[in-house]
Length: 153
Image (cartoon, rainbow, N blue to C red):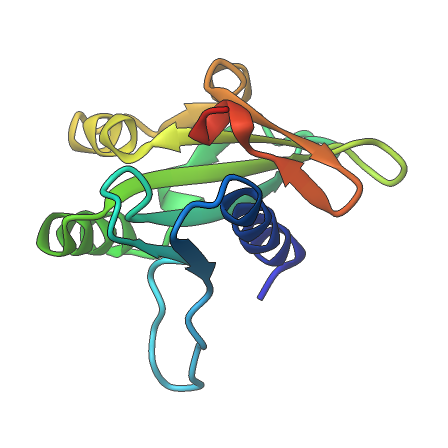
């Protein structure tokens, strides 16, 4: 589990607890010989919080200009996630962390899966950094993210 995934799960569960929402975020255990195509799951009877989140991190310090479907996702990952979301009825999101280098705050943004699949099906290469920054930002504070901009007040 990456630090980004761990912190996102922790932040989601803190939010649910603080708002007295019956929901739980977790990361499924990845086994050595089985693929895991989605990073974070949230279970809730409330459909607003029944979701799946794929996490990606890119280093803007190293000059990354884009989150590429061909580079940052495995060969069939986008299609597999889309099928999973349709079959499970979960809301889907792509959380993208932009790492800016040691000592600088990281930025993270949440992209609705509908926007991801729309670009993918059009044959576009991915999301450029400036486009990612137009989506809802989840503000990092220490090792947690303030996700109220994503989930509401």
